[in-house]
Image 1 (tube, rainbow, N blue to C red):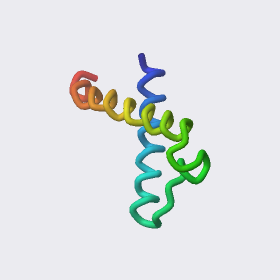
Image 2: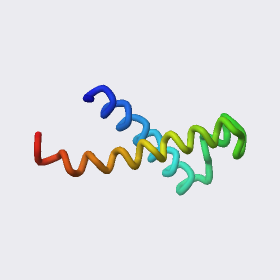
Image 3: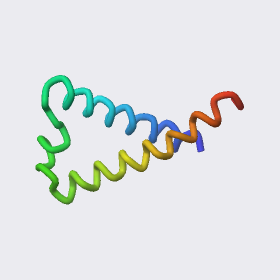
Image 4: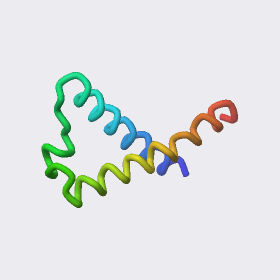
Length: 65
């Protein structure tokens, strides 16, 4: 379970960095590397979105550790 948590955390951080780049510089790294709304970029966005939803469970587990 710990390995999954670290993987999810890394992907959420990558997603946050991408959003920061979009906000500050208008640069979308996923679209830049994979094409704007290509199948691959949509899969990447979906996986990072699912990781973000899973990361919500971190809030419930903070006090338990």
